[in-house]
Each structure stands twice: as structure tokens, then as C-alpha cells.
Length: 421
Image (cartoon, rainbow, N blue to C red; front, side, top):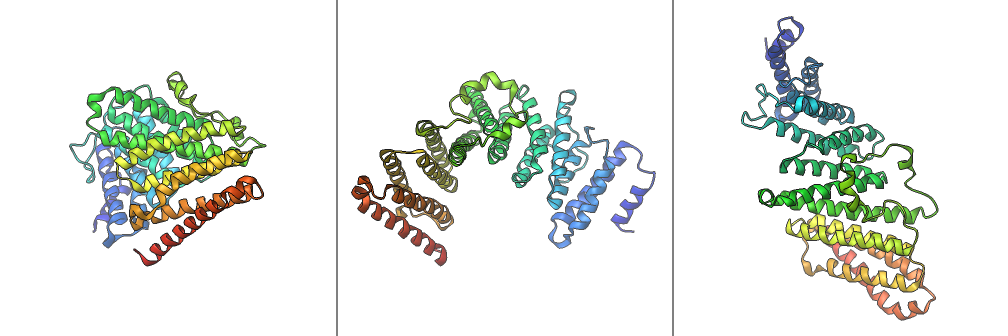
């Protein structure tokens, strides 16, 4: 009789009566499920899901026991990687929330899991698994099924704000909030996004007060600073896009139809941060300039940190978003002088970025092409907007040179991709 048959016999029998026996059998099914999922020589996703489901079923109703929570969460994560549906991750996130809240977060007990070290802090492991699930939820951002899980995640994070003390917890909390803000921003939920990013800034401020501890994880904090600044840049670009596209309507009306997801326990602390930038009203070029300037400041911060991290891809993507912001800003301009000034600012930035003198490696070339294509479209719009004006006659030769440069650079970088050099 092979191992699977023996497990099946135990599963069907009444021999598995004690909590220890149930955990042991569930652990065995989990290990077999992982082998069938991850071992190339034995890979069989159907058998993997079958064994993982057996493990999950055995622990039904026992999930919040300290001996069961880790294996349940790891099992559900593995199942979600096979099925690619948000429901299982949402259930596991809820279990994490319930477990952490009960009896002041009891320390989980791990029973012979091969992929968990006996020396590992299982409280930290559970929080790490939670963060991993939040990351996995990214694939469902554009899905109409995302609403339920985002509410669950926010509930968890909101309740954690009052009991977070350690530097590690603050970093993990901040990272999760940035991830959540991406979903909210993709759905034009600006009030909630602004609240999320303000909360992350506040957490970073608390971390920076503890300078001694901060020295132990400088790279993590630098990454958080880069990510939140980059998220603010995305926020300003998106709000300029939304309000330039819907000047006669309110693109934020979905926020008026439901209770907003806000970090209420931090409301007093976040007010001064949130008040730096609007979440709705951009009525004219002056309002748009304020939003753009804030985004440009955040671009400088993000760019500085990305350079320190040697993350050139993220830095160029930030340039791309700022280039889009120039385009959206220009759509609010009604007079020629303002349009000319915006064009000069854009040209100064992009000439310095897009030149081949930097010797960009091939992996970054697609980012440059994206930037140049937005630049080209903006030039075409500017060209036709000024046609027939005195400024057009003055700038004509310079515009032609600029356009020729942009098209030549697009051709140059496309050729590099084609040649693989």
C-alpha cells in the first residue's frame, strides 16, 4: 500500500480523533500537495489540488487553533496559486485577521511543516504570509471581484494601526497599504488613495523618529520612501487625467455611493498630510499647476531614492508618468504662453533623460520608447494648437528640430531592440 492509499484509509477511518492526529494528517496532505505542485518530475496540479483540499477540509472549523493557523493559511495560498481565484485568498486574509485579533495574537505552533524553520518567529511568519496574500491579490485589481477583499484588507489594516509598535511591523503595514492604494487609484477612488498614502507617510515619520532602530533596515525604509513618493506621482497624474477627461462631470461619483475606506483611527494625524493635495477639484490651469507641482516634487523624491537603490527601470517609469502629467496639465491651458512654458519644461526634462549618452542597457529601452512616444504625441498636439499664431512662426524651426530628434530617437531605440544590442 503506497502513502496516498494509507492517507486515504486514515482519512476515511475513525482513527484520526485527537487534534494532534488531525494536524498530522493535514500536514501530510499539505506536503504531498506541495510536491505535486512544485516538483517538476512529479508535477500534477489536479493531484496537488486534491491533496491540498483534503488538508483544508480536515481543519475546517479548527482554523483559529494555534496549531492549525499556519498550515491552513499556507494550504490556502498554495490552492489559490493553482486555481487563480480571489475567493480563497480572501478567506485566508479573514482568518489571519480573526486569529491576530483573538486573545492578543497568540503565538502559532508549527507541527512538522517541512517549509517552516523550527527557529522561525511564527507571529512574524503569519504576518509575512498575510503580506504575501495581499501581493497575490494584485492579479485581481482590475476584476469586479476585488471589492470584497479590499474591504477585508482595509479592516485588518485599520485595526492594526493602534497596536503596531515594532519597526518591522510598521514596514510591513506600510508596504501592504501602498499595495492597497494601487487598487483604489486604478478605480479613481482618490479620497481613499490619498488617505492611504498619507497613512504611509505618517508611519515612515514614526519610523524616522527612532533613528537607532532605523539604522538596522535602511534599505527597507528607502524602498518605502521611493514607493510612496512614486505612488503620489501616480496619484497626481491620475487625478489630472481624470479631471481633464471629465471637465464637465464628476469622475469621483463612485465614492459618494458608499462608505469610504479610511484609516479613521489616524484621522487627526493624517489631516495635515492629506491637506497638501486635493482629492477632487481641479477647475482651471491654476488648480492643475498646484497638482502638477506636487507630483513633480514627488517625482524628484522618488527619482532620488530609485537612483540610490540602482532601480533604473522604476526611475524611468516615474519619468513616463511625469511626461503624461505634462500632457494632462497642457490640456487645462487656454493661453499660448502657458502652453509654450509647459512645452519648454517637458523638453528640458526629456532631452536630459532620453539621450543615448547614458548608455542605457537593452532591458531599459522599452521604457525610453514609451516616454518618447508620449513626447511625440504631445508635440503633435502642441504643433496644431499653435498653428497660425505668432508663437508658431517663432517656434516653427525649433519645433521641427525637436520633433526630428524625438522620431530619430524612437527609431534608434527600436533598432536596438530589433538587433538585440
